Amino acid sequence: MVDRFHPEKALFPVVVILVFLLLAMFVPPLWVVVGVLAPVPLIFVYLRWGRGVGMVLLGLVFGVLFSLVGHKQAVLFFAEYAVLAAVLSETIQFKLSFDRCILFSALVSAALSIILLLFIFTDRESTLTEFFQEQIEGHFQLSMEALQAVGDKPEELKAMREFANEASGAMARSYPSFITIGILMTAVVNYYMVRLLWRRIYGPGLFHPARFSGWVAPEQAIWVFIGSGGLLFFAEGILGALGLNLFFLVLVVYFLQGLAILIHFLDSRNVPVFFWVLIFFVIVLQPLLIGAAVGLGIFDTWIDLRKIRVEPEEISG
Figure (cartoon, helix red, strand yellow):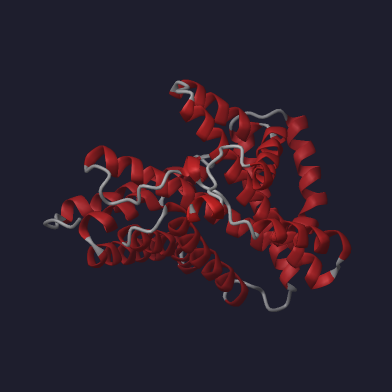
C-alpha cells in the first residue's frame, strides 16, 4: 500500500529514534527498549511509502548515527536493525507467513552482524573466544550500571558480578547464538508491533492471515535438539561449541511453540487481556516457567496438544 509521499511524516521516525538514543545515553535501562523497538518506525515507513523511501530513511538514520556516535555503532545499527527492518518489510509485502518473515529477517541480520564482528571489530591480536568474552563482560557491565541506577541492593549486585566473572568464559562459546536469539526476539516483537499498528490504522489487508497460536515448529527440529544435545555433552572444541549454539537456538524455537500453545488455550477460553499480560509477565520473570514453556513445546511434537495437525490419511480422504 503506497500513497503520496509526505517528507515531514517520513522524517518523524528518524527524530523519534534519535530522541530515544539520546535519552538512553542518560538513562541506561532505556537501551533495552530502544534496542528492541528501534526498527518499528522504520518498518512502518517502509511499508507505508515503499522501498525507495524506506531505503532513503535507513540511509539517513545510518548517516546521522555515523556522525554522532562513530562508525562502529553506526555499522552495527545497520546490520542489526536496518537490515532487519528492510528484510522484514520486504517479506511482509510478499505476504509471506509470519514465521517466514521473522526467520528470514533474523537470519540475514544475525549472519551479517556476526560477520561484521568477526572481520571488522575483532582485535587481530586476540582469539575469537577472547573477543566474545570481552563483549559479554561489556554487556554485563552495562547491566550492572542499569541495575545500580534503578536502586538494586549492593549484595545482589556483588553476587551478579561474581556470576558474570565465572560465566563469561563459558558464555563466550555461545555468543553467536545469543546474537541470533536477540535478533530473533527483536524480529518477533517488531513484526507484531507493526502488525498491530497497521491493522488499527489501515486494516488487515497487508499481512498474512496466519495466527501465531496455530504455529508449529518443523518436525525436523526435534532431531536438531537431540543431535545438538549429544554434541554439547560428548564433543569438545569446535563441535562442542557448535552443539552449544544449536542447542540454545532450538530451545528458543520450542519456547516460542510453548507460547503458541498457551496463547491458543487463552484465546479459545476468552481469557481477559489483563490476565494475558499478567501471565506473560510472570513467565518472563520466572526461569522455571520458561523451562516449562520449552518442555510444553517439545512434548507437543508428539502429543499435539492443540489438535491442529492434519494426518496424511485425513488429507487424502
